[in-house]
Image (cartoon, rainbow, N blue to C red; front, top):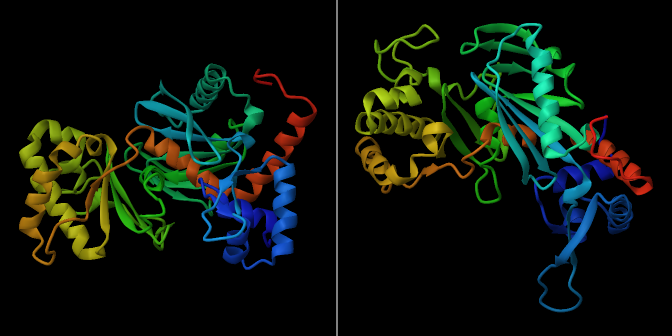
Length: 363
């Protein structure tokens, strides 16, 4: 189904874009009367707001527009081995509330009601009514097939072909699902960086590839499974069953066992291999990634020993988003994939607020 003009404007401006009416017309190939009519309607619905004037070399300065942060919130969830992370983000992508709950995942019937209870507790503590949530994104460590609505495989959780309707039944809004590293990758995307490799050094090692602002998923949704590339042939056994996977040498457990000197040596080899393959900047995130900044000089020097094609090894960066990256990225994924649904629900919410602001209770 073709998007409406308002849906196209909404999608253009999600994530904190600040642009003028003229910019909207140029970027979406719309006439100015069409832009003015639809922008006015979105402003009347309190979905868009003016936020200052653009620079001008002369004449009247054009007003800049952005999505109204109070137009609604998006829920982000990260399912981890031992805990669940919940966040809410406004339509500018700003983190509003966050919490972690100890709840080890089990694909069992009694786990999902516990998950729902934890979510409702988060809403209470954050003083957010479920009706204020426009949509949700769920980060999960596994291969997600959105067409079949299932987790194809998660080695770390030991599940295959797990239907996502289990989660959808206990969520209060439309939801999308993404691989955890793919979600974390979203948090590093901005106007200055639209193509890069994201290396997630968490309890399991993963990764993602962002090309021109779009995640590269591959033929079977497995692009970015960096943790299961062989780093040391015949080496340590990985939880996936193979020997020598990067996961066995670059996880936080490997760092604790090997120490920084050996760990950085393995990391430098792996990073330069990825650079040879894709020739993109590389962002290091995850539990280890948030500790890497003080060791960047040592890592860069080690990488220089293996990369004889670069004059300077200036393509390795520590992550910007250090906390709740997977959950916040899942919220960003929801904003991207649920645009039309988010706009419809935002309009309904704002219309309700005009007539009578709902209490902050749950239902």
